[in-house]
Length: 158
Image 1: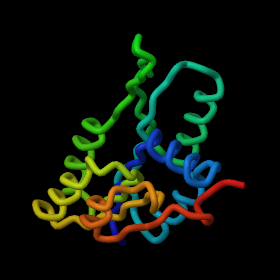
Image 2: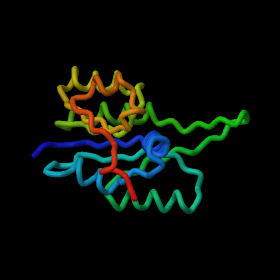
Image 3: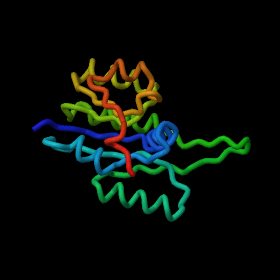
Image 4: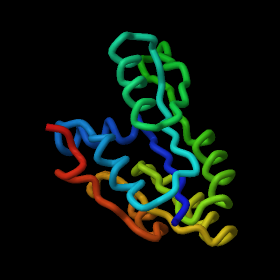
């Protein structure tokens, strides 16, 4: 049985599916698709928290599906911009688990991860599946992926 490690950049997936489709990502369908006939080594969802009830309910849903939810406080800057980036945390975890996995699944369209995907392919011979909204996923990330899986109708709610 193929060993899989799953990593979800929740903020990226939330904003790209909202922008492209005005709909939310279906984490249950995603889980079913990425874990079918595979042994899960780890499954992590990285997100920010403001401590509000709706967010906490969403985090409980992710945990019930099977994700280990990694939280970082949402930071609102004085200039109105915000920070809640998990790129370094995701990178550290992917490198740790790539060597224990046959395939790494990353749900994100962030081009900053192209070097990471190239590194796990070169160093550990680990394949990758990248899930992203086609029009909002960096071409460099798609090019480095062993498989690119478009987020489309079948992975959206409603």
